[in-house]
Length: 284
Length: 347
Image (tube, rainbow over all chains, first blue to last red; front, top):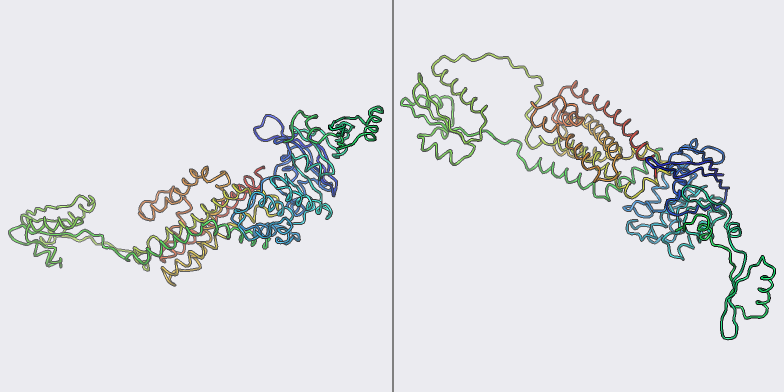
């Protein structure tokens, strides 16, 4: 659905490229995670796809049509939830959504329904400037859904939210996928990416360093083993076993058979660890 | 497009009211109405002139009396003159000594009178003496009135054209710019840029909003101050054209700055330049070419001509033509500036 080919971008006055030959594609109905630390090029990539930044080099195709030829009507198909809320603080939450809905040429969602969906309906008629950070973030997220977009760009959609609210937002993201939307998720939160994304791409210093499903990445870069906590008399002990070594595997089976097992943890790598392994940098 | 435009106008109207900007406009309207009702239509600013005839013949006093001079202004002695001058800082005194053949005048002033006025007084006294001698030859001059309908502008309404111009400048140029900076500060422009809104309705919404507010304001002030006398069609057109021009200029300039602090020097300079034609309005003889090129020159004098029924049809047509051309240039410049500097401003 979205194809990014050989995307290269340099900001005016910069001495090196912000993006260097980025190529990837996003399938319809997919949640594609774009992971990288601050300044890696995530927002630049999203900015070029959404038209906030000019296309300098490379190609961005949506349904095989260059994005530069799609015109203003392309935005009817797009929803963008920015990392910062960017809302009118002197307008109420309802007015913010009502105003934004009025800019589109396609059927839009009822603002109250959206505010209810993100859990801030009771504050619909309060000025958005009085909202807490989390409420502003939810209003920002709700705004991105107002035109029932085919393509959703979500930049750190759960940042600054409490776990309960973050779970609610993740549920809504899944609902959008069920509706048929395609989602480009930008984040440096590996747990969010791991939980939500069908595929993830790691970006570092403007270059893609890896791209696959979270499972495949974990299998490829992780350790195929388990760590076991077990009771041994009055004491607890820990042991690790490599599952691709027959002897170790047999020892693990023996332990399970003979000891009182407390916990068993698989030893696949986290996305954070894989990123660190590939780039020498942490995501956050 | 109409639906989107109406939506954007409604949103800009809410922001203008909730930001308190509209109260500035109401305050200016209140000041104008106070001027209209509190100030007299006319104030006598002429200096009071006292005369003393210190000659032996008393011919000067007789001449003054025959010309209908107010008796209280003709004083019997120089001591009385000193007392009268001490009581009024705007008064001046004239003492006549000598005779008709060898007249001597002493003019006593307070120091706040111009040389031109003193020369005028000297010439008047000279004419009086020549008349008394029978040697005065009046100059015959034909006087042609270009517009017989023009009446002196009442003092309490004289400033209204300036306030009306100031209001459109304030609304379109200043408050339009403030709205842009608020949008930049809140980042709401980014969300607008990923909608199908576009540059044209962004500009038109602000232009139409400030046009409507300016029109309501201008017509209400004109109705209260002038009643049905002005040509309201011409006035409405002038308000719409000038408000549109100032809004376009305000947007075109504001997009080059990030916030009002950065804008302040350029904005304040342009505001001051825009108000320079007020000097020509206050002193009509001071109209150097560079002032007449400032768009607000045509606006201020246009308001004066329409409100006070001054100026010929040709003058008004010229004003509208100049404003029309300025609008075309202003729109092109504003569209390019907003599109390149605001709508495609990067992240």
